[in-house]
Figure 1 (cartoon, rainbow, N blue to C red):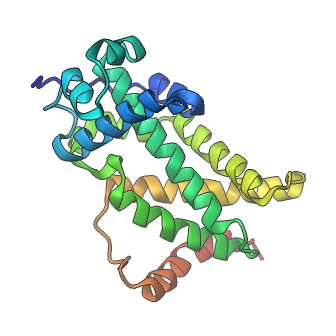
Figure 2: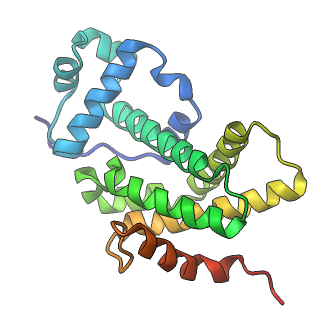
Length: 213
């Protein structure tokens, strides 16, 4: 199996986030599922395109026809993981009224998902690549926008200017807090104790959302 780590590219990751149709067909979805399983088990180094073909049940030629390289497969898989992450958070907060409650619940859901995410798996050992990817301004901006857009889809309503500004504030807090926990997962917040985690998160995010007096 190859030992070279894929080069994590902001541009490639953004392209994957903006292309939700990438896994529309069954074969492509199977390839991404296989890549996800390989990443979770081996990280970014110890697997090949042949392993993807074998695990997905798709012909090797088909894998290369859809994805030119292992790098492209990794970016597409991480982007799909990120889209699912945004969707789950948006759905979790869609029917909560108070902005502080939205942020608390969104962060709680996000942190639990982050523990299971590919971003926190073996491939996260590529610290420099992960740091440059998650902290790039375009990625943060797109993540914020993705949360707001998904929130509008879930609620079925287009936000007015004032509501949009509030939603962007919530998304900003969620994205920045989420990135910090992915990069530094150790915390005094006990995610296995839901009530305790909510109380802790409320103390963290409350001051961020309290308007100046």
